Amino acid sequence: MNMKHYKYTLLCLLAVALSSCLTSKKVNLLQEPDGKKIPSYVDTLSFEDYRIRIDDRLYIQVYSVDENMTKLFNNGSNASYMRQQMMSGGNTYGTNELYSYLVDENGNIQYPMIGDLPVRGKTTREVKLLLEEQLAGLVKPVGNYALMSVDVQVVNRFFSVIGAVQSARVPLIKEKVTIFEALAMVGDIANYGDHSKIRILREIEGETTIRTFDIRSKDIINSEFYYIEPNDVIYIQYMPGHSFGVDHVTTTIAVVATTISFGGFIYALVMRSINAAQRANSTNTGGN
Image (cartoon, rainbow, N blue to C red; front, side):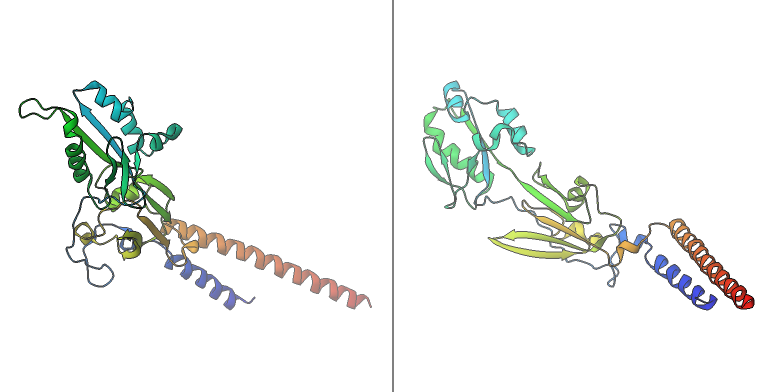
């Protein structure tokens, strides 16, 4: 390799390293849309109460002044402890199966003393009111005060994150979880995760859809992408050529310097071997 080719190779390596550097434009969040690299989104923000689906599990707690009724419907369990375990995604000794009600393929749950209770498509508040109406006859009110109430929660609610993150399946511990909170729960996007093409796989009315958005845009907070829904799968792809990237200019300089040093060492070693071979050949020729 002559010096001209050697220099050309080093310049190519330097160009590749520098082109792979991260810039704030590529990774910063809440940037102002510019209509080019940072898109704007129409104000479509809306949060609707979750509507119960087939295979969901409902935790139902009955509160009553009648101790026997409370034990009957709550299996004599420690309500606050069981609720905490299930809402956090725990399933110690089959807790979720024992103390929750599965929504069957017909959209019903089997509830004691009621039988089939249609819950599919309803919110938890609507199920609460329905149960209180069904159970009202079991406890006599005192004046205008009801002596029985029901708490309904959807348990085993998760979302998943895969790709250029610490992949995980995470329990939804509250009703409203934003995309930023969801990513924070798994440690944020990796250095070379593509912030401009975040994909969400979401089930809508029984069909799986794929939605793509740029999380760098400030407009995200007013868009349909802002809130996570149960069973969402968030996918973050890597930037093209991420395996050649470096994070900082100082690292780039170090990489290039090391490459130059190593290249020079190999070049000198090869030239020394060639010169030694030429000298040996000359000696042998002279001796003959």
